[in-house]
Image (cartoon, rainbow, N blue to C red):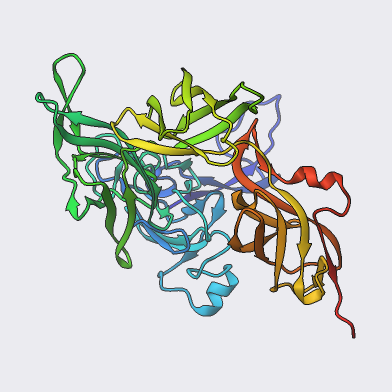
Length: 487
């Protein structure tokens, strides 16, 4: 029973007389009242008991998840909301038909929104199946609605996926095993440091593995050797050791790893894990992971004049957890490091005195990092490329061509071997051949009219990439005209 129905009648009597023991005469009015019974066993739910929990298998963002909710006293009138969207109630769940999938925005086939259904099994169990649409990652907010009680259950402490964690909930569990996850991919392995034994030999490597779609049951291997789910002693810097896990999952995007030093220059990091569709695997090849990845920015350049050598001031930056320990000049080119200054983590300010031939041959620097390996940085003077002309030989040498593109043109100028990207207006062109005086590029498709031809390098000077933008001060120096074919 969920309600009581009460019938009441109203009678009148003379106030000057004693109230009669029974109603006297005909009732003046009557009304029927329906009163809900305030009983959790009929109108509410309880998820505080030991049998409360939720079970699901993590799926990809474009798939459909099945969620089982266990508890007590689930009302027959219960409804389930997913991120505020009500699920359809079904007497018996079954795979959606093509018509239902289309009506619900695609069903299990890459839906663009929330859709699904749920079944009231009994007072102790609910089953829901739903999708969130392509691109969704995480666990949505699950809300139970009954006549007596409405509550989001994501923060309720309960057992999730029979994991046995002491403090678990849908919200906590989603950090490592959400209902919907991205496709497995490995994007980066950042070496934090080497671990040495008492004899100074490298024994282990501590690193951070980044990517997407990681699961708690993943198997991680380095060059085919699995990283165990054990513990290892790590020096604490004071003569003692701290026991740390060899594999620690931080989220679906990160693992902290400690593994034996492979002692080879090339590594392949592989992640394997089971899914509803079977085994999936992703790998990341690495070469010389202990060498710092260095980027350089030229801050100031003074060309040579007379007997005064050229002077170059630049900033070297090491990526990730690497730090720069020393900078040396490679080869005999009369260049010397005048000063190095560590002004930020991973950043070093370097001043070089250079010979007068710097505009011809690059200066090579050997940058040694804190992991013991070195990287080579090639420096060129911050002199931009310039364009003398754009030639289309199929158009009698004119700087023009048809709208559909796909044909080759020659760009003549100076320092063109430093060019990494070419744009006709805003559209990129494909570089076929490169030399100091000539570039051969494939013209992209365009619209009728004249566009500027931009040549861009990877040389960073005073916060900007060097390009031939100075050519644009002359109206016809670095331009190309798209023309329609004659009808």
